[in-house]
Length: 114
Image (cartoon, rainbow, N blue to C red; front, side):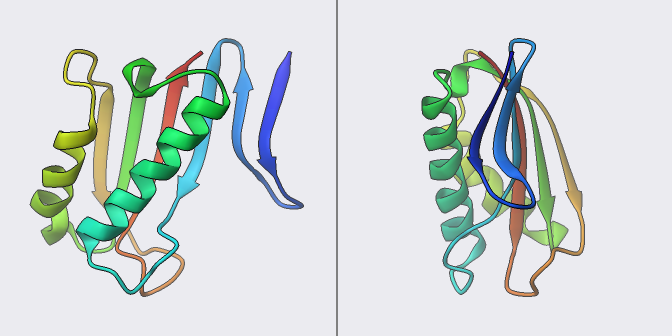
């Protein structure tokens, strides 16, 4: 069975299939905030999507972080490290990438067990 969360005409914000929840790239609503504020906003969105699907950050298996400037790495980690379940840290990648809007500093995708 496949479940779709917050679906629109182009995509779903998350899709559950085969015991996993695949979360689409999440970006901050307030694009004028600094990278720390954008990171907090996105992590809140992840919490919400995880809860909606009946899972939590303790069940994350993979996180991909895309930064518009790799120099933001330490600032992002200062927020991420306070949020992540340290007993169950997921596999993670962090890369520099050009994002869809020049005001975006970060985008995050995730996969979690359900």
